[in-house]
Image 1 (cartoon, rainbow, N blue to C red):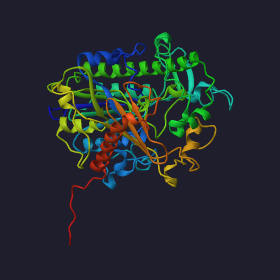
Image 2 (cartoon, rainbow, N blue to C red):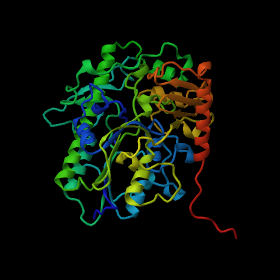
Image 3 (spheres, one colour):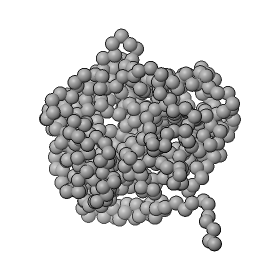
Image 4 (cartoon, helix red, strand yellow):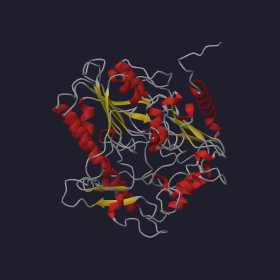
Amino acid sequence: MCTPDRPHILIFNPDQWRGDVLGHMGDPAAVTPNLDAFVRDDAVSFRNAFCQNPVCTPSRCSFMSGWYPHVRGHRTMFHMLHPERGEPNLLKTLKDNGYFVWWGGKNDLVPGQHGYEAYCHVKYRPPYPVASDRALGDWRGEPGGDKYYSFYIGRIDKGDAEHFNDLDWGWVEGAVDLIRNAPKEQPLCIYLPLQYPHPPYGVEDPWYSMIDRAKVPPRVPTIRDWSSKPSILKGLYDRQCMGNWTEDRWQELRATYYGQCARVDEQFGRVCRALREAGLYDDTAIFLFSDHGDFTGDYGIVEKTQNTFEDCLSRVPFLVKPPKGVPCQPRVSDALVELIDFPATVEALTGLSLGVSHFGRSLLPLLAGRTEEHRDAVFCEGGRLFGEEHCMEKESLGVPESLYWPRMQLQRTDEAPYHTKAAMCRTKQFKYVRRLYEQDELYDLHSDPGEQCNRINDPSLREVLMAMKDRMLRWYQETADVVPYEPDRRS
């Protein structure tokens, strides 16, 4: 049963959605009518929301625990949250405190070898066959071609069906069915970690055709002088072999990605309509955010990296609607926020505790409009040390036929600092990146929003650099560890 201090919770979590592809953020090509209406009427959308790691598993471990990746070493795709090691997980906290937790979507959060019983009542899989991009034929072309590592499909043929019948649609339809037949005795937590708009870049009509190609913002140009940028970017550029793509081809790839986002917007709208029809919408706290962003052609690269922090990767959509009775002024907020603020906000709404010290801050004062100040800086981090064999992700995608081969072969070598450990400190105007084995980075985002001019050696920004370094040091000192709540006996 839902009560004022136990609202229903919807966690709508698309994968790899850039923070700028939203109509209400001013993007002229974004087709997001459901999210735009959501923000107009009921929710706050944060323009400056940032993830804590630019790939899936470390980001998810962070936003479900309230910990930065460095707190317990969640820096790879294969090191997940372990409750038996004292690592918190919001889903487990909700389940242990009476929520009916329904999980429809991908994992990248908990150890697959342990199953899902500790975290949810239902780990949903559609009860019928679903399709995948592997069913779409040979869309990559020949090895060595300029499309082979592009992740680009384009229009997906759905036949006579309403939509391409993939897992995302199955999970969304499963969530709608749950809402229509919700258990009466428990508050709901619906966790929908979808796959879209994660590449490959492909989508069916009507979403493919509804994007006006002429309105898609131009990409950040390819870097001319790579010497001041992280080496992994040049490595990806060389190995993805897309240097000869015309701007028309890039624009088509980007428009396809926009169509994927439009499709997710429609799926979000269907879930919200189901909540309204079931009489549950007002009593539901709704959170929509992505785990990280996507290059989508910026700098001449596609997909993502694990240790660079360009805004196209680190800035994400983050929309919040509290339950009825909790003050909220619907709008776009310019406050700096982090995804680790998500579990802290759930704690504030429910009165529950993750049972550990964490570093999130409740967003409720921002939702109410009592302030527009939340954080003076946000942080993102990734990469590995030389010699960290267990962080090279040798378990996966280690063959040239894999779409991820250009990145994976760089992550698995110590011959160059491609995968150096790094951390970002970002304010509203400046971004500083400390890189362990490479040149640091410093950008003035007001004059250089595309982060193309690294001014780390600019003497006119020396005081800014010193202040950013000091802020990063303070962050590390404040978040370097967590002391368990339960003390041990000394004898």
